[in-house]
Amino acid sequence: MAIRTVFRVSVLDRTMIVQRMRVPQFVLLWCFALVFFIGAGCRSLSPSADGLGTNLLHRLAVPFPAANRRLPSLYGELTRSASDSLDNSGLTVALESLRRAEDAERASEPECLVLYVEAAMASWPLLQATADGQTREVGQAATAWKIYQRSLDRLTANAIKFERFDPQRGIALTTGDGEEAWIEVEHVGFPWAAKDFAEVYAVPKGEHDSLRRYWEEPGIGVSLVIQKTDADAYPFMGPVVPFSATAVLRPVEKSKPTVMTISDRSDRKVPALAGKKKSEPENSKPSVVGVLELHNPVCTEQVALNEQTWDLAKDVSAPLALAQVEIDRDNYLDFLMPGREDKSLGLRMIEPYQPGKIPIVFVHGLLSDRMTWIELANDLRAIPWFNRRYQLWSFQYVTGEPFIRSAAAMRKALQDAVACCDPEQSDPALAEMVLVGHSMGGLVSKLQITDSGEALWDSIATRPVNKINLTADQKEIIDQLFHFEPLPFVKRVVFIGSPHQGSPFATGWAGRIGSQLVIQPHERIVMLHAVMKQNPGLFDGQLTKHLPTSVDLLRPDNAILTATYELPVNPVVRLHTIIGSGKQLKDGTPADGVVPVASAQHPGTVSEKLIDTIHTELTHHPETTTELVRILSLHASD
Image (cartoon, rainbow, N blue to C red; front, side, top):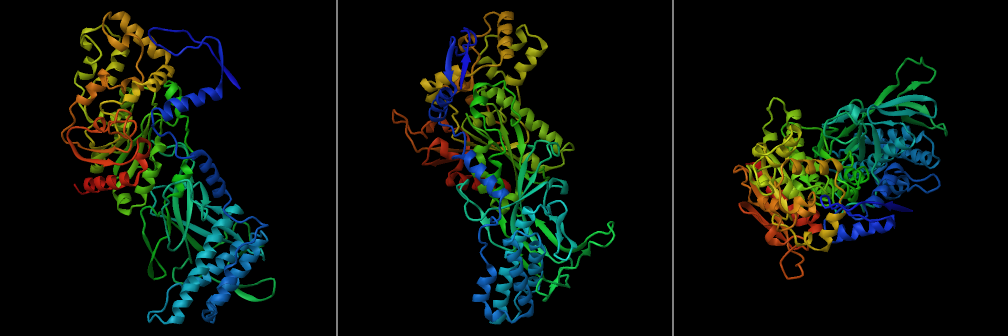
C-alpha cells in the first residue's frame, strides 16, 4: 500500500513537503521509528506490548483446559499422598465431590460447577487445625486447604467458561437432577459500585511475560480480573478499566456449609447443595447456598473467615498487563499530527476518586503515552501502605505540541478534576498532590508550579500583551499559554530524566527532521499569521518562520526553554530529581544517552538520585521505584 503526499512549501509553517511522490507507507513508519524512537530515545511502548497484551487477553478469555486436554487430577494426588488424613468423613466427602467434579469438567459438563461447590463446602469446616496442633489434624487441614483452593479455582474458571458467572450478582448452579441454586456475590472493600463489575476473567497460571516484575502472593481465595465497561460511569476515567479481585467461597452461615442429600449416577449418597427443583413455580427464586466474597486485594491483606484470620491471595499485576491493550497507542500520529482527535488524551484515574488519598499524577515524555508508567505503577500497587495513602492518576498529551500548550491543557484538567472531586474543598489529601514527570513530562509538570509573570511572553515577543492588537479569542489563548500562577494543590514534583536545559538531540539531524515532519493544525497557523499581520515586528527569530514544535522547544538555545528553566517555583513545593547516567554523549558528556546529567539537574531540589541507566529505562528501573517510594513515604509522613 502506498500513500500520495502533495504539499506546498511555506516560509511560515515550514511543513515538510514532497511534490507528487508516491511513498510506501511502511517506509514512512520505519523512518519515524528511526528518527524518533532511536534518535530521541524516548520509550513509546513496553517491549512487544501489543503482541504480549493480545496473548494475555486470549489467555484471560480461555482460562480453562480444552476438553481434549487432560486435566491434572488433584483427587489422584491426594489419594496417593494423604491417605492418613482421609479417615475424616468430611474429607472423604470433599474428595469424592472433587473426583466427580474433575470427571465432569473433563467431559465439559456444567454439572462440574455444583460438584466443585460441594467439594469446597465440605472442606470448609476442616481448614482450621485443632488447637492442640496434633499431627493428624494438621495434615487434615492441609488436605482440606488443597481441596478448597482447587475447587474454588476450577469453580470460577468453569463458571466463566459456561457463562454462569455474573460478577454483579453471583454464579448460577444446576445439578444433574435439575435442581437450581445460586452462589451470591458480595463485593468487599472496593471503590467501585456493583454495576461496575461488568466482566470477569480468570488469571492465567504460570506465564507472566507482559510485565518485567509480576506481583502476586499466596493466600486464601482465587485471583480474578474484573472489568468496568461503562464509559460514562465516572469522570476522568477511560471506558474500559480492569481491576483485581480475590474470590473466597463461604457458606451462607460462616460457620457451617448448607447441605442436603441427592443421588449421583452411582446411587451413592453424598452431601450436596440445597436447591430449587425446576418443577417448582417459576417465580420462586433459586436457593442461595453459598456466598462468593469478592475482596479488593489492593487494599486488603487479610480476611477473617471460619473463626480465624487468613492471608488473602492477591494478584495486582494482571489488570495492568491487560490494560496495555486497551489504550490507543498511536504515539507517532499523536506526534506528527498534533491537531488530530484522540480520545485517550487528558487526565485519567485508574480507580474512582477516593477522599483521603493523595493523588500522584504521572506525566509521560516525548513520543510516549501513559503506558510508559505501567511498570512503575505495577511496583507501587504491590505496596500496601502506598495503596492506603495514594491514588494513581496520569496525564496524556500530544507530544508534537510545544510543552507550554500541553502544560496549559494539564493545568485546566487538574483544576477541573479538583473542582469536580472536591467542590467543598473538604479533602486535605487533594491539597497534597504529587506530580512525577519523565523527560518532557517534567517540563510540563514544572509549569504547574511556577508563576509565569511576563517571562515566557517576553522570551518571544518584543512588546507586552497589553500593548498589541488582539481579538478576544487571540488574547484568551495567549493568556492560557503564557500567563499563569502555580496550582496551589501541588506540593511535590519528581523530575525523571527531564531536559530542563535541553537536549543536543533536538539540534541534531534527528531533531531537525522530526520537527519538520510535524503537521501543525491549520487554525493555529492561521492565528499566527493574523497576529503577525495585526502587529508587525511583534516576533523575531523562529516564530517568523514557523510555529514551533515540541522538539524545537527542547533545543538548548530555545528562548522559551531558557525562560522556563528560570521561572520561580512555588516555595511550598519540594522538588526531587532522578537522573540517568548510563550512557555518555559522543563528546563524553555524562548523560543517559539523550539528556545530559547537567540538563536533568534543577536548582533547589531536596534530593538528587543518579542511576546508572539510559533514558528509556528510567521509568521502570528498580532504583527509580525505590527512590520514588522513599520520596512518597516522606511525603505521606509530612
